[in-house]
Image 1: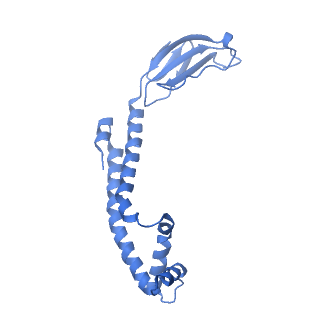
Image 2: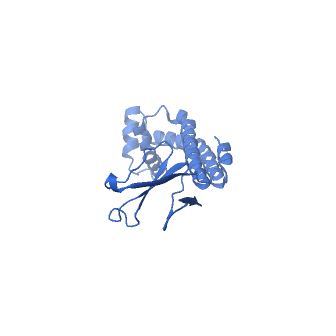
Image 3: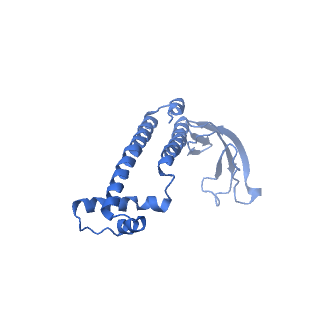
Length: 189
C-alpha cells in the first residue's frame, strides 16, 4: 500500500485521491466484489472528521491498512483565498454600513427605482413617478424637489461605495495573483 503524488496503489488498485486543504487518513479495506467491483473500499477522512466505514457485512471486510494523506498545497492555497475573500467582503460591508445604517433594508431595495424615476423626471417632467410621488406626499414636498435630492444622494453614495468596491476588487485581484498561502495572508483591507 502506497500513496505517491495523490495516487493510492494497493495491489492492482490504482486510485487518484482527492486534493484536500488539510491532512487526511486513507483507510483501505478488502471487500467482496459484489460490494465494490475493485474489491477494495477506500475511505479518505480529513483530520477531525468521522471516518467512513464499508457498508457491507463487517465480517467480509478486511482492513488492509491506513496511511496519512498530506494536505495538498494547491488546495490549501485555494482554501486560503476563499477564506480571505470572505473576510474582505465582510470588511467592505462593514465599511459601507455607516452610509446605509440609518435606512431600513426595504427602503434600500427601492433606491434603484427611486433613481430611475428621478432620472426619468429630469428628462421628461411628465414621467410617471409613483414611488417618488408617494414619498414626496408624506414628506410634504414636491416630487421634483425629492427627485433632485435622490440624485444628489445617489451620486454621493456612488462615490463612496465606488471607492470601497474598487478597493475590494483590487484586493480580490491581489488574492487571484497570490501564489502562496503567505502571500494570501498579507492581503488585507
